[in-house]
Amino acid sequence: MKIIPYIILFLFLANVTETATANTTVPDTAFFHPRVSVTLERVSLADDSVTVQLSVTTRGLQLSRKASVTIIPLLASKGKENPLPAVIIAGKRRAKLDARETALTRLPDKIYRELRFRRGHDIALQYTVTVPYSPWMRDAALGIRYLTSECLADEILGVQTVIPDVSLTDEYTVLRDDHAALSDSLRQARETIRQFIVLKERLLDSLDALADHSCRGIMYLAYPVGRTPLLPDFGDNRQELSRIDSVLRPLLADTTVTIRSVTLTGYASPEGKYDHNAHLAALRVANVLKHLCRAYPAIDQTLFRAYSVAEDWEGTVRLLRESDKPYKEEVLQIIRECNIFDGREARLIRLRNGDPYRDMLKDIFPRLRRTEFVVEWEKTINN
Image (cartoon, rainbow, N blue to C red; front, side):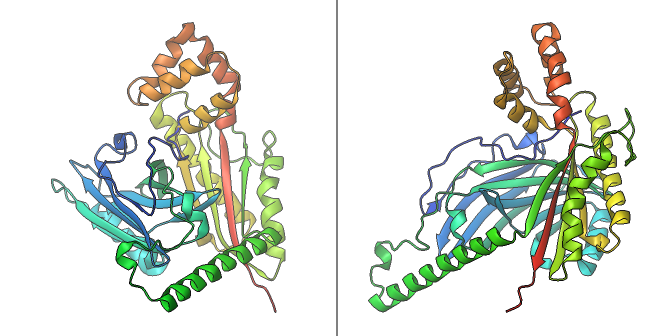
């Protein structure tokens, strides 16, 4: 089965101090969506805040009335991630559904702009968002997450790195020549604020060490060939489902805990036809979500969210790099050079008369078929 990567790709390196400026379109954006382009304009740090400026454009985009494309800029580093407000381009019917959902459930600050797709009209949007600075952001990567949605199912097209390291200084604000006239008292006040925020971050890290507010895990669920219903008694599924159960049960029993979200991402391996694998991955993760909704009625069903990844080539690359396979460099080169829709799998099948591909079928691809989960919660601390 095939995947479209969820892992950030480190495609090019930029040396950025306080301000990162570029006019280069995200490399190979067509890999994620052939008609959507994101251009980095500026990343800057000032007044204890990080500002991200992007240009979002489309050229000849085609969408059905029920479909949408979502673009989510994000800062990520060392297991932490700060998604920025999203840009959504939606067909007519999808836009109406989104407007209703936004009114009922979504927080407005999660969406920067929802644009109505009109056939024959290209889009050009200037994106500017400012967020509070945290110390972990100083060496964060700036990426773009691409999602596509048809009806109720979201599919991750990929996350692509715009800047692998924004290199923001430890100082919250660097005083340049034009700031030289600042009074000593103002500088002292700014330094006090900086020290206070650093102290706050250290205290939060200490609290997280005592009681994490999120937990990640992986379930390797088994299915009959070509089937999508989740059968709890099939294979080792009971044992695999116990992984998320061991997280949710204690949280539900703790009266000081409020569960905020349960996110599932279903991955399929790359062999076979893309459309079939995308369909298989989406239905399987949807059935896992339904099972969890039934198993945990105490959790509000609106807190569950499911995504699917049809072609986990990023996982393939990761496993190959960690392996000692004699053919791994040749396979990695094919993956780098050949797009998934331009005969990548066919080239892999022809490599060395198919021996590497047959070995990957047995040893690499089975480890890619998985369901990852992230549970997030808040804990009330009584003084």
